[in-house]
Length: 310
Image (cartoon, rainbow, N blue to C red):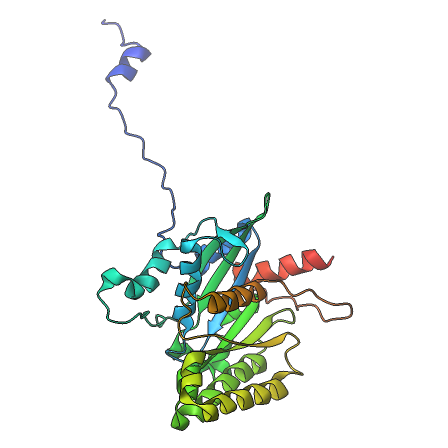
């Protein structure tokens, strides 16, 4: 009887199975989804700024302008320290680049989507030994803005607003510059904030700013347009001053240029205000517990604020 093959011989003749490489989940570099934003906020604190405004009010232009500042160098007391959405920023800046072939600087419209998209910035203070901080920027598309400003049900769908540290409501200066469009621009801004408040989408520690965009267009239109802008600010302050604890107003140009020192300073001050946490004063109401079925992204903001208050 032949000897049985040894275990070593069997192993040597056995077919070799190739190891399946482990799947590594990486970011695409475009704008982040809700799940991607969850991953960022689970790792470290992140400040969320949401831009809301009618179509062509300047939301995407603001995103592009902020990103381009850090491409040029330190800005608003911070230096660029990375981004998980570099390709997304480059896409929205493309039409403003000389190689895009456009005759005038421009930016694409905010994409229409039922899901929020986020642009991530990692920044580090310019002072030696400064900590790294994370900022998420998001813009509500013009179509969602149109639906939400008159519908509480549509406003409730924007669940990421519960997590927002700052909400910037853009008032389109180009429309304020046109007599026939002024009242509609004013109504749009008032209606969207009222809808957010009625739907209880704004937390007690959320900063809200009305930003009059394209200020240069208003000034060029003459005294009547400037006066209407001033009147609009007065009306909005009177209407929401008692309902929004941290309400502010700001004016910026159509597309702040890097070479313009005065406009550059204005945008730097705006970004500093938008990303400065609101301290909860003594006796102020704390943010309520989020629903059990809320996304992890929304729960993170609540857990972080509770931890700081305790």
